[in-house]
Length: 445
Image 1 (cartoon, one colour):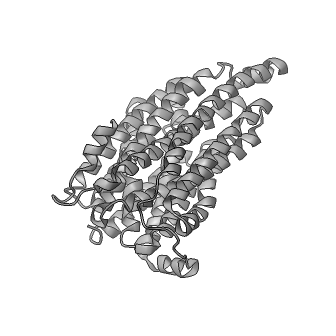
Image 2 (tube, rainbow, N blue to C red):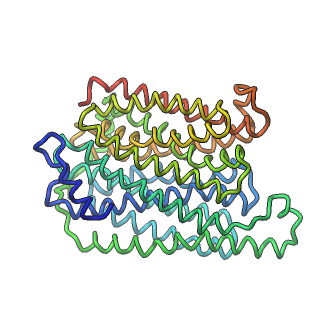
Image 3 (spheres, rainbow, N blue to C red):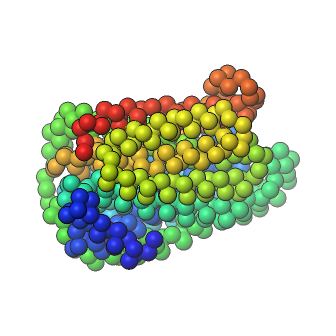
């Protein structure tokens, strides 16, 4: 969707009289949307570093998933500092610092590639993701502030609807630039390979890992310059923050606290499902990494389509009730992913992404509704919940390595049983989100 179409969409009326985005904020909104696209792109490129590094550095699933621990762990560590920054200064300062940290982290990929060092990659990923944490902590409440509270949930859903477009771009980049340039040599081939030849192959593979992250620095700098030159139209500068009192108020708000818990499980589910999707497809269909990503791309298209469809239906249905219905469908298709034959199971795997589509912005909007001055710190708590991606993803990887739930699908054997039954992890996450939706079905309109 181009900028003109986005502006027309922003004019959409949620109740026949209230604009989703006020006219004076449309340019800022469009630039913030570009940030949503950027971190969506980076999130999904990073998801694909797990199978890439697993092959390049010859690692187990749980070791390669340290990429996600570094990435989403940074979100948890820097979310509160981000809230303090935007509370003390402004949303604009948060955007500038977030983009700046991304640039520093992306530059770290260069020495990591030259030295072929996984640990340097992890540090660079942590710094890069720390910038995205600050950016996301800033941009979500920034979008909410660009209009009336009555349209805030729809506004954040519109902005978030562009995020998976970036995710889709990230998948194409991962498929053709990163996974597409992995050498076909298997783990067994690499063990037997001459060390010098292996080093040469690894160097070439890592260069293609590095290129897209460094190239995106140019995009980040364009956005950075825009916000550097612009003046904040939101009156949020110079406010004092009583951290302890604000935390007490937030912890007494049951809708907010349950929202943070639900967001933890949602993000953990999303990242885990997408991280291990290629392994699932490779296991059931005996294809390589680049071919398996084609299913991931289809799943992302479904995710994007459902995000827009669900946002439209929010004009007619309460967000919490709609989320509850989608969560029930999510539970059903996850069971299909575990138990159905290969082709039907992969269809169900794709449909899981469709069911996840409206969860993040809807939980976010419900949890922040009516927080007033506590919205910035509240937003940080919801971004900290992205820690779920750092914890649940490696846990799901461990269930694959160890076959933790394999006995629950006795009709399948070995690795296939382990991979299939690992999807009990996202199933539990869907249940938590369903409970949050039910709990708020009569409270949030």
